[in-house]
Length: 78
Image (cartoon, rainbow, N blue to C red; front, side, top):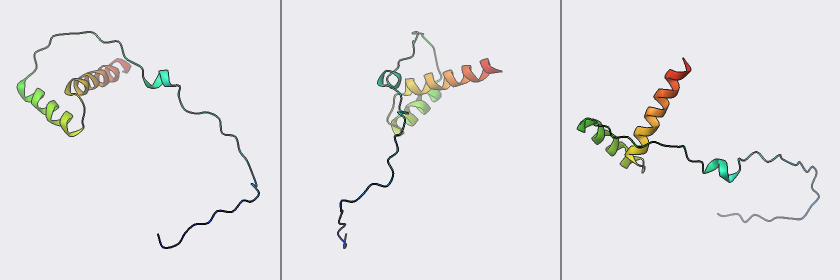
């Protein structure tokens, strides 16, 4: 921060309009329809997901749901 930057008004050589490429807010905040189920998991699996979820500041249930979604997507595409 030894040198101060000075801006001067001057001609703009080229102005380019950029198309809006960002998705609308309703696409960013979508919710996937879910179904409540009861499942018995091993204690080791639940502890693993809880530990990983804490490291990544998320819910362990979200991580398990995402894993199952990816598995189903992969195997339904083949």
